[in-house]
Length: 241
Ligand SMILES: [Zn+2]
Picture (cartoon, rainbow, N blue to C red):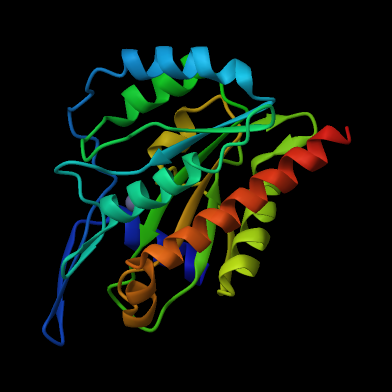
């Protein structure tokens, strides 16, 4: 409940917060009008995806004017994109193919992102975010958020979230805040998808130490590796069925 409230505050509220000479701006999952032209990307993914057994789409949340959580110079949109790019490089031909919905610093509406997901029909969608807790700068850790309404035999989003949380936290030696059902639909993209999906809250920009890590290339790489290990584990379990 505590963390669920934090997540709510972090990603959903429009707030301007000043403390100790630091400015923290948390933003709503703004659905600005931008849609861009995603058609070329869709065609590329559709032709490439045949090379892989298991296809994962990464949503680098926010982008362009939709900066997401912002603390000092650090913007959520840049961290989600950096980790997303690192993940795509981990694709293994014949096995796991990882594609990115947003490849540049542009805003894309959640509707357009959802349409892309529908057309591409990946096996899994991972939605990357960075958290903020304006009420407590000591809060840190990773959390997974999932849509509980979605169900496919042998795959629930809660199970996917649990596997990803375990692998990610082990890899970065971080703190697991747990997995949370998005019952209040605060992650609009999740409720639009007919696809197994999880939102990953990678850490808190309002925590000085975690923010320091999140901006580092090496730490972003470890996050990507942890998520990749989660994807591998999920595929491995599904292959046994
Ligand atoms: Zn976000």
